[in-house]
Length: 194
Length: 238
Image (cartoon, rainbow over all chains, first blue to last red; front, side, top):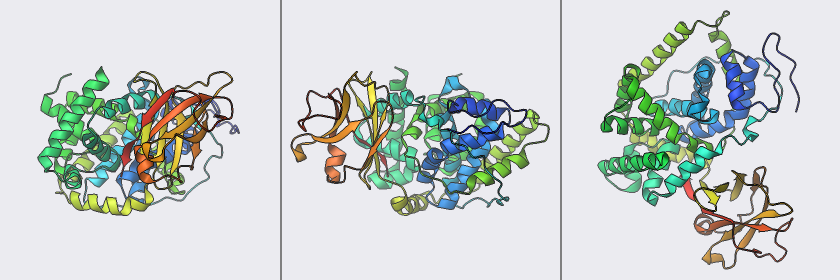
C-alpha cells in the first residue's frame, strides 16, 4: 500500500482504511484524489451493473461516465443511514443505464477531453465487509418467490428487460407479467419490512 | 409520506426499470414535483440496490477515468459552493432526460433482443447463492459463472473455528457422493475454476454445502460431519 503525496490544503492522504463512505465525504468537499481512488475501487462493479443493461460498449461507457460525474456532483447527498455507499452509487449508475435503454437511439456523444495523469495508488475499500447484510436479506426474500417470478424480477433488475421483453421471454401476455411484477414486488416489500 | 397503492407500484416499477419509456418519463417528471412520490421511488431503489452487489465486476474501458476527471474539473467552479447553481443544473439535466424519453415511443422489444444477442458473449451467465445455517445466519455468498465454471465465495459473517478450516462441497444426486471444491477462506474471497469438470445441470441444480474440517481440508475426501452452511443457486442473468 503506497500513500500518495498529500494534496496541498486537502484533508488527509489516502490510506488503506479509507472506506467508500469516507471517500464520498472527501469528494463532497471536492477532493479530486479521493474521486480517483473511489473510481478505481468501484468502477468495475458499476460497469458490471451498466454493461449488463447496455450491450453496446460505447453506450455502457457513456453511462458509466455520466454516473461518475453525477456521483461527483451528488456525493454530499449520500446518506449512510439509507444504505451502503456502493448501493447508492450503483443506483445512480443503473438509473443512467435505464434512462439510456428506455430510449431508442443513443444519446449525443460527449467530446472526450484530453487525458491527464491519474493518481497512482492502490486502495481497495471494497475489501471492507460493509456491504453484505442488505444483499443477504434481499436474497432471502427473493428465495421465497416462485422460481419464474424471481427470474422476472432478476432479469428486469440485471438486464433492464422491459415488460414486453419479459412477456416474450416467458411466453406470457404483458398484463400477466405486470401482475407478477406487482405481486412479487409487494411480497418483497413485506418480506424486507418484516 | 403516503402515496396511493398504484403510485407505489409505479414507483417500484420505476426503480426496477420495467416502465415503458413514456411511463418512465412521466414518473421522472412527477418526482420532481411530488416529494412523496420521490420518496417512494427512493425507498424502492434502496430495497433493490443490494442486488447490484451480486453483479460480478466487469472492467470498464481504460481511458474512462481521465475523461471523467477532465469533465468534473471543467464542471467544478474555481470557488466551489454555489449549491443553487449545481442544483439547478441537475434539475435541467433531469428535465432534459425526461423530455427526451417522453418524445420517443419505444422500440423496447428490439432493444431487448439486441441486448440479449450482443451480451451473450460479453456478460457471463451468473448464479448466486447464500450459504447459511438458517435465514438469520448467512455465512458465505457464492457467485458462479456458468461460462467459465468459475466460482467466487465471499464470507458474509463467517469466522473460522479455531484450528479448523471451512471446506466447500458440491452435492447432487447426479454425481453421487459429495465432491470437494476445496478449502475456502473465512476472511477473504476465494476464487476457483474447479467446477469445470461438472455438467451445467449439476452446477445449476446442486446444493452447495460447507463443513468444518481439519486445516487443509477433509483427510478422507468426504465431509467429516454434517454441513454447517448450505445454499442453492439462483440465476442473476442472462
